[in-house]
Image 1 (spheres, rainbow, N blue to C red):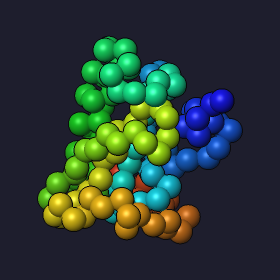
Image 2 (cartoon, rainbow, N blue to C red):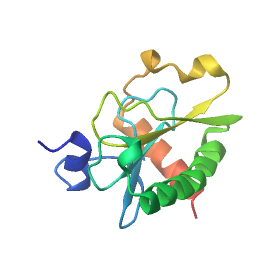
Image 3 (cartoon, rainbow, N blue to C red):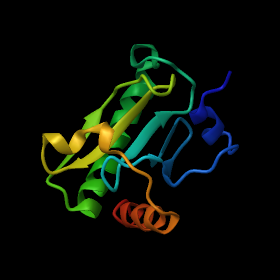
Image 4 (tube, rainbow, N blue to C red):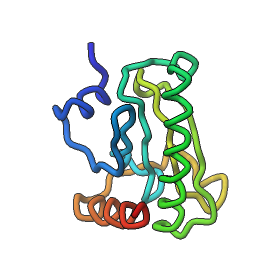
Length: 130
């Protein structure tokens, strides 16, 4: 069965897209730990980070660095944390989370924002990618 991320990649489910190329997709997490929380995923459905083809893994992390800089500017946070948990969706994904301190990286405080808030965050991050 296809993961929820594969359904997003295939256009079956909507997302707040930040970046896309032939092998990766970045979009806002539906539940935002902090505003700007972005997921960067490989388009190939791979369950574990150790199984991602090395060229895709390297490319994903290179692009994540660019996206992370945009999230940093848009959020005005002093840090953007990276996290690979992999339990919630069986599809490799990297979390980029704006943070002011370590407790700011707590997934238990993730919450849904309004469509207008998500669109504003999306626009702010994308404006720093240009």
